[in-house]
Length: 297
Ligand code: PEP
Ligand code: MN
Image (tube, rainbow, N blue to C red; front, side):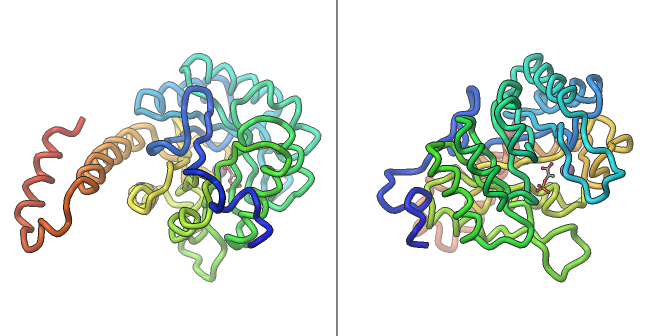
């Protein structure tokens, strides 16, 4: 790890915050939401309006989709990027999309506020160098069989090209477990915290692949100290062309956002409490918690 000159905490003052439009990732708990893929103008704009209303900070939507089968929907490409940009403009949300090919990096930067490097491309070093030179913020997802050390080395590739704006993303890794799509490694959050100055967010959608588990993992990410989450939301999940089983309906997303707000307040309150003073005073904590619920918006 001694070669990670730019990515490690050493010698770096404080924590990096990455500006994405008016949003600053690394301060507070940022919510990125939107469909897995851009499918049509109607689908994208309707979903964007819903996630914005619920309180999302950044809009996602894939125009180039890395699919296991070459016969599955591959994304709308340029048409998708134009739609994504329009949805961002109409809602005032900055936008992020994945790029698969180094040849696409330069021209795609015109349409988006942040470029995503997907799990399958985490160690595509040509692509990493290209996004490093692009000047755009980069959302770097952990490869599905990658170690923390490998993830940090990939961040180093981008930083060493002169791009300081890198956000790491835990999206689950392959294990022997089959109930979930991946195994979400939440221990990487405090691990990254003690090693690096870079912000880290969590993707509980790909991390679990199951709609019923996303809320619990989102709240757990907040509790573990993540800088935010990225959640797949679709205005009509049953019509989703990609990752239907994990597509969250807007009403469910809105309820989850309320829980996140409530939990954020509770965490802030806990931070201000002198832990020695609450010894054997469980009732006191319970009362404080109740007063939160009644004030939570
Ligand atoms: C995505 O976020 O659209 C995606 C394909 O995720 P991952 O690269 O983590 O599989
Ligand atoms: Mn997806």
